[in-house]
Length: 90
Image 1 (cartoon, rainbow, N blue to C red):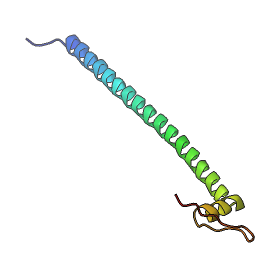
Image 2 (cartoon, rainbow, N blue to C red):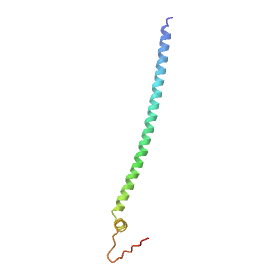
Image 3 (cartoon, rainbow, N blue to C red):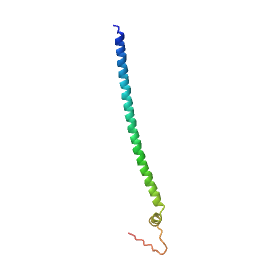
């Protein structure tokens, strides 16, 4: 059975509408996935910036006399002139 020109045109229009709908759904899905990836990247950037700031703060502390004295006394066993070291054996 041969379709009339009107029926063929209606079928063509229907196929175009369905194809456009599929394309729009795929585009919306891709956009949504991209938006989620962008949000994850932004959160990762914020976390990394916080880590960098924490490392900068730690570096600032490690350059202070207080830190140097603590390390010298606790880890290296140094004492200041005039101090007496007591060793307690258990």
